[in-house]
Length: 260
Image 1: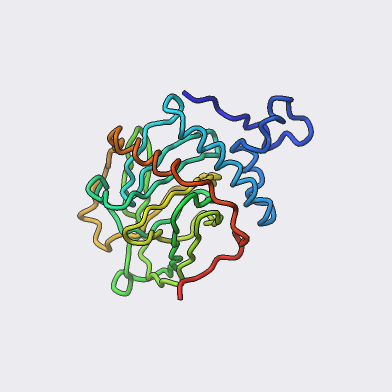
Image 2: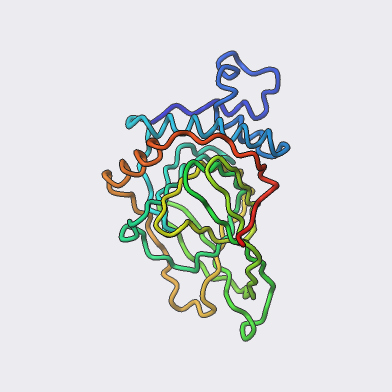
C-alpha cells in the first residue's frame, strides 16, 4: 500500500501540521480542495496532483493494479478515501482486444464532480442533453451502475429519455477539463492515438448512470471487474512516464474549445 496523502489539507487552513504543509503543493487533497476555486488556481493544483500521481505510477511498489474499463481505458486507482478519489486513466492505441464488453451505450453520467488534467494526447467530451420521453418517443433508457464487491451491477430504471448531442469539447495535453456530476457525456480519443489523464473525483453521493437500450431484457446484470495483465499495465505506465510533463495550458477549465 502506498502512503495516503494528508486529506486534512482540504480543511486545515493555516492549522496544518508541518508535514502536511510540506506536501501542500503536491498532495491530491490540496488539488481536491482547490478544484472549485477560480480556473487558474484549480488548474495549477490539479497539475501539482498530476506530479504526485506520476510519482506513484513510476514506483512499482506503490503503483496499484490497473483495472480494464469497458469504456476503453486502463484505470490506476491511486487514492480512494471518503468522498474523494484520484485515478490515472490511460488509453492505449491498438489494444481493444483487452477492453471488456460494454453493457450500455458509452453515454454516461458520474455521481461525482470530475476535474481532469490531460497528461498526453487529446480527450474529447461530447456533452449530451437528455429530455424525459415516453418509451415510443425515447431513444434510450437510463440504467444505474451500482458498484460493490469488485463488480458493477447494471440496473434498468423506469426512466426513458430522448438524447440530443450538443457539442464536443476537446482538451489537449496540459489542459484541464471539468464535468459536473449528473452531466451525460461520452469521451473520445483520436483514432490511433494514445491519451492519459489524472482525474480527481468529488463524490456527491448518488449513483453512476448510463444510457442504454429501451428494452432492458438483454442487460447483463452483475459484471465483474477485471485487472489488466501485468505486462499491459506496465506498458501503460511506461507510456505515460516516457512523455515530458506538459506545461499547464493557458486555457482554463471554464474555457473549453469545440470541434469544428
